[in-house]
Length: 120
Image 1 (cartoon, rainbow, N blue to C red):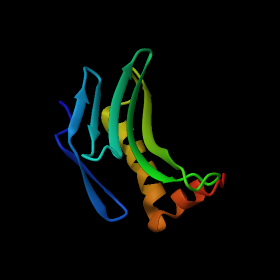
Image 2: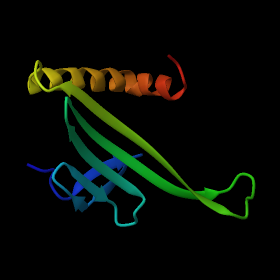
Image 3: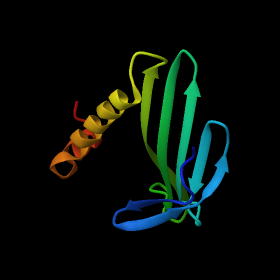
């Protein structure tokens, strides 16, 4: 089963529609109409299973060294789940992922702010 088309994300209060732009046996990509926001999903199978969902954003801004020149900057945030082939159920892995997401978003995202501030 694949993710529905389109996906939607809300960044800074703005909903962004992401229609499917590519798909493969273990991958999928969804990109905004302006090309500035993209979600990718990928699965790797081997001795361990890795599942990754990534949200990327591009923007154009003035070059700080040459203000008359614009540069394209990109940032990404992703979640990776790495599990052994056997030993954990999907429900157990989901519980661990849910715990991390809840931890990061508690207290209006204070843990994310600490992470982005370089705290360890």
